[in-house]
Image 1 (cartoon, rainbow, N blue to C red):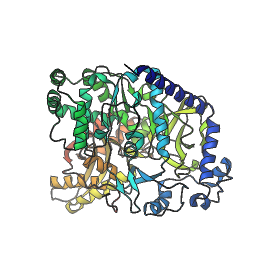
Image 2 (image 1 turned 60 degrees about the horizontal axis):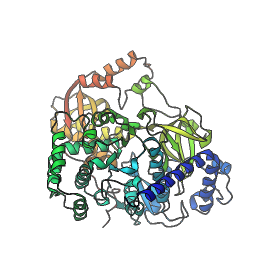
Image 3 (image 1 turned 45 degrees about the vertical axis):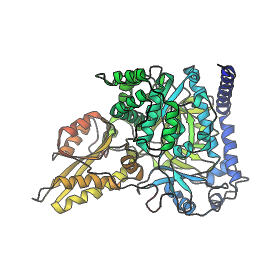
Image 4 (image 1 turned 90 degrees about the vertical axis):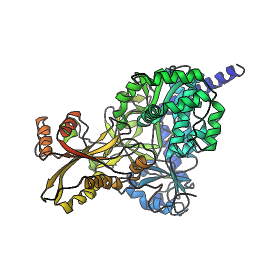
Amino acid sequence: MPGEAPMKNLVCEKSRKALQFIEDVTRNADEVQRKVLAEILSRNANVEYLQRYGLNGNKAERETFKKVMPVVSYEDLKPDIDRIANGDTSQIICSQPISEFLTSSGTSAGERKLMPTIEEELGRRSLLYSLLMPVMNQFVPGLDRGKGMYFLFIKSEAKTPGGLLARPVLTSYYKSSYFRDRPYDPCTNYTSPNETILCQDSYQSMYSQLLCGLYQNYDVLRVGAVFASGFIRAIKFLEKHWILLCNDIRNGTIDPKISDPSVREAVLKILKPSQKLADFIEAECTRESWKGIITRLWPNTKYIDVIVTGTMSQYIPTLDYYCDGLPLVCTMYASSECYFGLNLNPLSKPSEVSYTLIPTMAYFEFLPANRKNGLINSITAPTSLDQKKDQELVDLVDVKLGEEYELVVTTYAGLYRYRVGDILRVAGFKNKAPQFNFVCRKNVVLSIDSDKTDEVELQNAVQNAANHLLPFGASLTEYTSYADTSKIPGHYVVFWEICLSGTTPIPPSVFEDCCLAIEESLNSVYRQGRVSDKSIGPLEIRITEKGTFDKLMDFALSQGASINQYKAPRCVKYAPIIELLNSRVVSSYISPKCPKWAPGHKQWCTPN
């Protein structure tokens, strides 16, 4: 093919430079970190936030910064963030204009966190993306000879009262020129046209991306989504709609339900009638078992690219079933606050995945985490951190192998010594840069998809719902919960033991109202998953026999827990406990409808 050799040479040269960049910045990690902090402080020397603590950014040394700047959480920054959101354009936290807010997981007050960002951060994120394939090609050569079938989606966005967009970080990236106008590159050659990814309607987006992926099935060398849950959702969508998809491939058409003109046009440029391919897909989808369906429909697939660390590990058995044991690859580690690093050994087992933090992305510090570990504590009390160690931060190159830390970042966009909330364990080193296992998200007790529900939020939600029992002379004695992912989409299950002092029976509709009351009290990320993304199923309350939580305590004591320290866990993951609880369920109720949800914070309007 004309031009194939020059293109291959270009790819090889880009890969070589990318790998050399990783080598250089990890070898000189501490020096790079010093420069990053100096650059952040000098360019933001005159911002209000730094001056508030008496820091002269132009002359500030790392030691002075560590001495005077407090370690902060989102609630500490909220007054400044609210000022920016409401239209204050003065240099509050950053000398460069805040270009938009990136929405992060919900707070216990039920609203999304707003992470400030600046235009140049898109370039920094783009840089990290550009490193992924050069690393991957070392382990799986020849990926430039085919395409990736990735299920990528945008989510709704809002405007703050001051006119700034507030949207998820991936929506920001996919809508940017870095993604939309990217030059042809085998590393970012996807089966999905941009128009299908940028379609706001989740059904039309999923359908059209699957249609294009199926039509180009022999070109596909890697498949994926952001989260494992999203990829499994795509398989379930295929299970439900394969007949329509086959019909479109057979006739070279696209179903009338796909009404977005730009999506229809983009798909029809790719699609041509293929009786043979439609028959092949139909034969595979009508087989008795869907085991290995990914390798059957996309036979050249070499790996699955999804996040399976943290709470996503609950989906590994399902992925293995559908993907016939293909490698599960977690390529990068990122958040709304900052992009952090990448996995330099992508074919490692999910349980052994470690991420190398790239020292140019931000200034990294680490707060030692004194977690309670082990089975006994996991069934008696949630993870806790030693709050006395708040100021004892460790630099990137000084972390110790095997130790656990909470990640703290100082970013170019105006976060200073910000607690991200992720607990990481040092797994090794790439030159001088540490490699971390992701252990957990601090305080999160329930998660199905991108939602994160902490214990305080769950407690408030359950309390709100339990108020519905009072007119019937009933009260909630005890409760616990778990994320049930046995079906897709997964859903929250809350076990209740109640005390009945009245004689009036409680109608089922009241318990259904309780389900909905819990959902209405949860954060907007959860509610968006229920209403818009359909990534979370209706919440379920299971009523247990009287004495169930005494049995749960007996079980914990039999495992060695101390009766003096025992506390009923608010979330359970240990299979024998879930079996014990389920064996004592007397009735169960499902939320009767979706909770209320609208883009943005409650007080904002959506953009025109």
